[in-house]
Length: 140
Image (cartoon, rainbow, N blue to C red):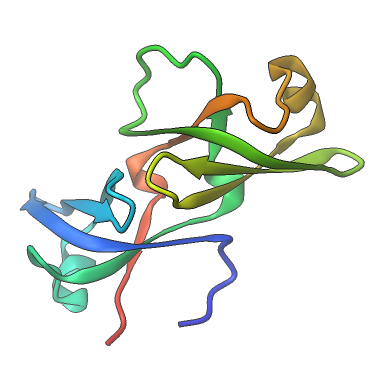
């Protein structure tokens, strides 16, 4: 599977809860981190998602927010880790976070946000991702 999204995080489906239109898909990544995705029921059915299915959480880097000392937020996915790398561009920066289980998550945020957060290598930080921004993929 080749995709343009910077984040393709391997894991397994731990639960699928179907609603009237959408399904809530719980994934456990290979590093043990928990992710939640909201996808349509037809997508969940088409992918054959059920408990134990190997799957990928796919997130565009521009859909990943970064925070320090994150309190309560409405986003379902708040993944704690450490800043592994910051690459500044003219306007945006690419921030790579190493999660506690070893998985890396890449975020593209403004250079001004990096400055305001004071982000530097080794800092504790969190990747914040809305469940509706998580796509699910499988190797079929």
